[in-house]
Length: 141
Image (cartoon, rainbow, N blue to C red; front, side, top):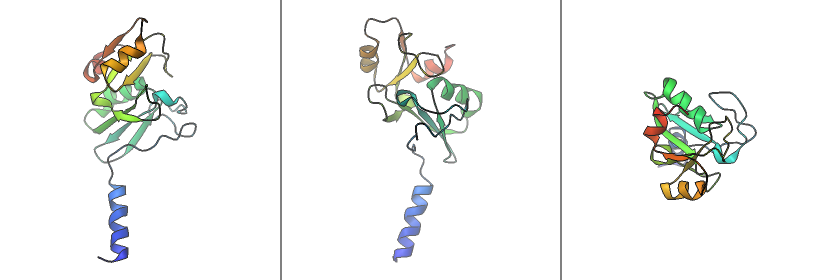
């Protein structure tokens, strides 16, 4: 295989990627509310079935879009791991924490965690509750 064919195939694979893209904090805007994405612990993304990446400044914006018109067109969901800001994790397998002591950018007090132990540790003695992806989608938060 020639060099130009290798470069073409590598470019094609990158273009067809269905994974997350790095969020450019301070310059990317939320797909849902159009505000700048600036708070690292709360950035998140949806990847459509066609590979389009949509970035959000808060979990509540992601859920608003998903519930509004994204359920049938979403391939993947990625949320920032609150315990490891800047790291995106699988949103459908994350644990979500509703805790009034942890304000999120749009005021729903939601953060995402890789597991329930991490969410409970973050919650500490504060009021709150944990939710699965399915519970989050059905919640009235």
